[in-house]
Image (cartoon, rainbow, N blue to C red; front, top):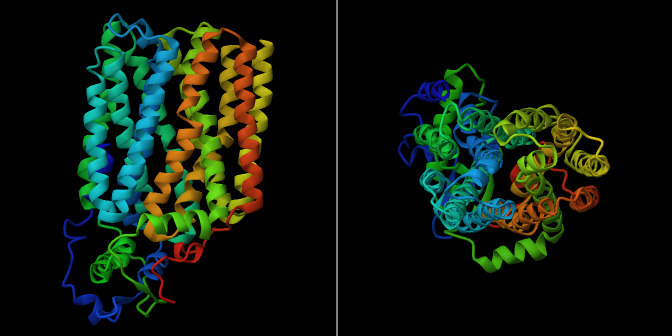
Length: 509
């Protein structure tokens, strides 16, 4: 983390300080008819023509680390499940462990909706500071929980911060990354969830060791890991500018082009070629915000097929992941007799497989294409889960073999889940992007995720392998159905500008 912060500091402190508001006009980048509030702008073309540079790396590290935090939170919650049950203060049951996870996801749903709505209205930069602050306070408070009710409340608030982060961060990254890099960059960022998972698993191995900390203190210390990381992230984000695309649609094109002037100057200083000629422009009518009625019209009338695809992908992957991962530790401890303090060792290879999936397969989503790769990864995930579930029900797998099987399954499932987030963030108009991400995340997680940990916790409590196999079959069926829908109705968004994938609502041409 210190190394990443130093690299961020290597950028000039003045890099994103806005120049004279008239500069962009003098250079011919923007013309504006104030009477009709029409803006002719080259912002999208200027962003998409850039080659990858240090600025993009800063964006990915400082903002994309949100997925690391989520992976950390989810893994810590799963890894300490046994410790939460054994805690003399909390004494949680399996059902309460699953229910606490559902509270976390419910908070993420509501946080995504609230902060997504604010992100489109108030700007990306303002919100990704607020959401990180909510997360920092809530995850630190979790360490001081004194009963199930307080633990569930703090997990709910932690989830609200993470849900809000998803909407503000995903929209910002999408709007900065050039089109030819967008697919695999987005998948790798989403896959970095599993870097956080590995950190959580490794931390739990140390902190849950009774020779290192007393049993009721180890799980509390584990929740402080996210707070420490979050403080470093706050410092890194000071250098991130507002999204030029957001400024463009909110009547502030001068500021958008001034930011781009400085980004391009920094690229040239680093030896990258940036053309001097006038890029392609388009006209739009600036607006302060988008009414919810227009959001509804866009989602359920103008782009209803895309909405169907987004809901199918998000719901299936949310159920698939949350059902299995939130109860990962419970399966190992209850069915395989793994000691609660050793669960982290089984999470490490699982996390590695999940990170390698998007890393290795990600570029194929930009070359072979979105539709075939989304359909393939979803279908393979469903089929492999059904097969592994049958082997689990038959009792032929050891704890090691079960972990190996899950690692293979989620090599494909991780790429599939990452592509769901990519799909809902790039296939809807700029003016409602953050709220659209929030909507699909909220509905998908609400339908497929909130009930899943509680359901699987209850299935595990039955002690029946056959009952749990039924839950696995349900998850497999959802993934297969989503794969079919993506193959039929998915959008070929690879290597295309966001404005070509989804025409802005404010476009005048």
